[in-house]
Amino acid sequence: MNWKKLQNGSDIRGVALEGVAGEEVNLTPEVATILGKAFVQWLRNKTLQASVSVAVGTDSRLSGAVLKNAFIQGLNQAGANVFDCTLASTPAMFMTTISGDKATTAGVMITASHLPFNRNGFKFFTGNGGLDKKDISEILQLAENSTYNDECITTATVNSWSFIDEYSLFLVDYIRRNANIKSNYEKPLHGLKIIVDAGNGAGGFFASKVLQPLGADTAGSQFLEPDGRFPNHVPNPEDKEAMQSICDAVVREKADLGVIFDTDVDRSAIVDASGNPINRNALIAMISAVVLSEHPGSTIVTDSITSDGLTSFIETELKGKHHRFQRGYKNVINESIRLNNSGEESWLAIETSGHAALKENHFLDDGAYLVAKLLVEAAKLNAEGKTLTYLIEKLKQPLESEEVRYSIADVDFGNYGKKVLAEISSKVADMESWEMVTPNYEGIRVRCTAPDEMGWFLLRMSLHDPVMPLNIESEVVGGVKTIAAKLRNILKEYDGLRNK
Figure 1: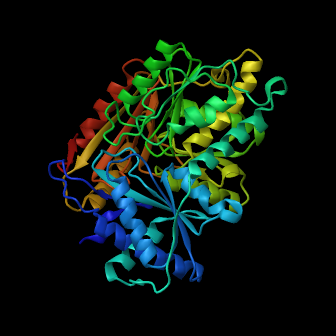
Figure 2: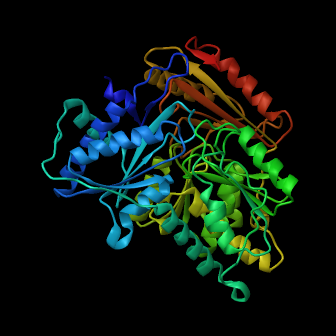
Figure 3: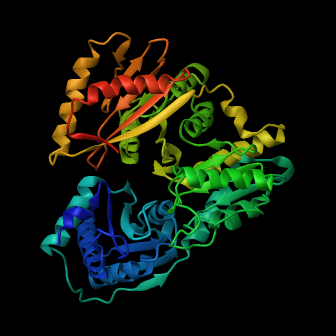
């Protein structure tokens, strides 16, 4: 058993079901039981407490129930008391660890986010937040070496806890208090039609348990029923088919707003009344407008592929600071925390993928909380006869954008990618109308100033895979094609690169 192969950054992920050619099952119930024992041992090592409690939830995946039961068995055998939260969201499972007198030592979500039906995994939380890569490595090391208490003498318990109900009440209360609509305090979303697309993941609760109690009309919401086959579309706000589905639904239902979640609700995006997606740069701009109105001049941390137009919007229009960092939601979160610890005020860390973490919410990447914060503004603006898009009227979007992915054929793909980036950096320095952007924290970002280009590109290494993604944006017609052609001329020298 290759335990290290189960690590995916700060999560555990593996193949849980047969059915996909070339993908061998490596996340079995037996493995889940051992992970439960190892996690309890890890908790005891960290907390120095013999008595620990763990809340466990799942998304709608077909393998979720079996893995959950096996994982709980391992937790119990190691002596941990367990709260079975059944269908839940990833953010909710963190909240179990800070829920007052009922707080658990840890929360665990069984999910593989937007990955295909045959995958599954584990996300771990303590009251300090999500575990980091180092923590996951330690848990897997304990599992591999069997350095855990295999059978506990005491009798551990398993209790049911429908925590998603408590989490929903938290969101409802948040929206009511902060919208503070005097004429309709209990139902601040009255008069708004808001439809939800949960993609048959775990986010269907948001329509019935959050929006409806606040007075919103949710008729026309779609794919709310949990179904781990994901028969309608991938539950992923970055997926074009998924976004088109919610955009079409908003227009069809004549809704004021659409909301889409990923499988485990730690990511989200919205759609305006005209059926236009508000995701990626637009979503970052919108929540930045809200955050910077509350915390003027503070720093917004994003990942590396955000646009120049977003930087201009944050710094020129909103008078904040844009700190473009690295891909990976934990990277942007940790960087925002680091800035705060160094004395630089930062209240928002957000990826273009839809992961958004706010300082006011424990720096938890929570798709439902992000939407709740935007709904507060929607309620306020609605009272003034305005819509959320008012917040980003001055955001300049690129005329063209494209992502190209190059696979690396070399076995030592990490070092090969570093070599490519280093050599291209030196070549760019000699090219007219191309200049390196600094500071830059990932790959190489180049500003292209020729009249037929007027844009930028970012070439970087993927976080985990033998892939080099290339992002290009331009403000002129044909600019992306011109930049890509010039870059292809350079990249063709590298036999180890393949255009996917």
